Image (tube, rainbow, N blue to C red; front, side, top):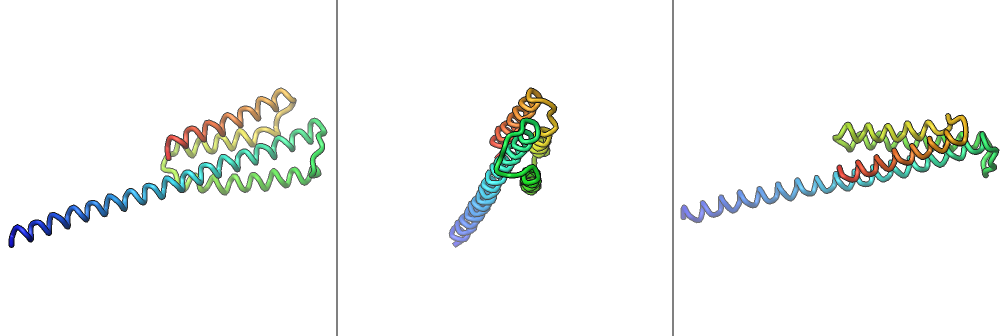
Length: 145
């Protein structure tokens, strides 16, 4: 009888540990999936914002014609910036890595700099730096899911 009780107790202990391990894994996987979704949404929002910034600069400095007016392009840039900021807050909420949040912010700052370019050469350097910063964020985030 003592052996049976001991066996039941040991079995229950192992079941509780297995259940706790399974719950930790499920929470960990759910967080990983959320981070993947948020980080990829942020990179996508940054690229959309970059495209809007590039279009705005080209319209202002090279008189390129777009479907939108100058005011429409500025409104699009504003909307894209707002979307990026929303996702940036989500990045900050789901990461426990200050260095990842800092890379996210750096990429945003580099995209925001594009319309400040004075000439075509500076414009090209700014948008390439922005693309590289976005790629660096993605690579850094990928290793920290």
